[in-house]
Amino acid sequence: MHSYTQLISIFNRCFKEDLQTELVRGGHEPIYIPASADYPWHRVVFAHGYFASALHEVSHWCIAGVERRQLLDFGYWYHPDGRNEQQQQAFAKVEVKPQALEWILSQSAHFKFGVSLDNLQADSVQQDSSAAIFKDEIYAQVQQYLLQGLPKRAKMFSDALIAKYRPQQPLDVREFNREEL
Image 1 (cartoon, rainbow, N blue to C red):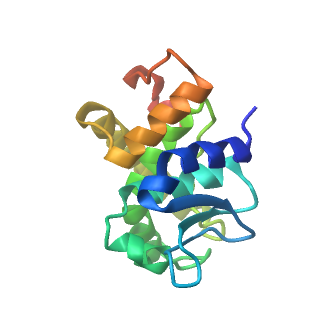
Image 2: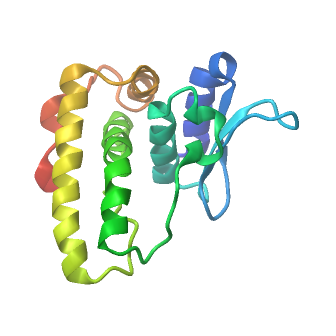
């Protein structure tokens, strides 16, 4: 059973004390909120208690540098659903690494990963073409992470998820099959 409360507990054990960052269940939209005079913790807020949303937002946090972690939503732009082809390419460019990490974290937790183009209003031809390229890029990035090593926070969280959800079963590069995306 994959409970978002377990995920919050695991994340907070790993990062709350040392990095003053907590994982928080939110409402409709996920967001990253840096600490302020009003609230002493940085917050990775995920949508609706969805396990997948939490893994995705944590993935963004795992690759954000110190400076980006001082900015609301890491300082990223977000153009809502209905992006044109150029906007979708810009979206994909910044989403490859987080979604590759999300896939790794999902495998670490024995949880099904799903690629997100986050553009449901795009025409189907555009969506199919960009989806295939995007999936290839995510797969290549996963292979690179697994061969060269995960970023420090991602490795720490992955190890904690493995300890909880698949003890004594370290990740294996053969678990990641491009055809399953």
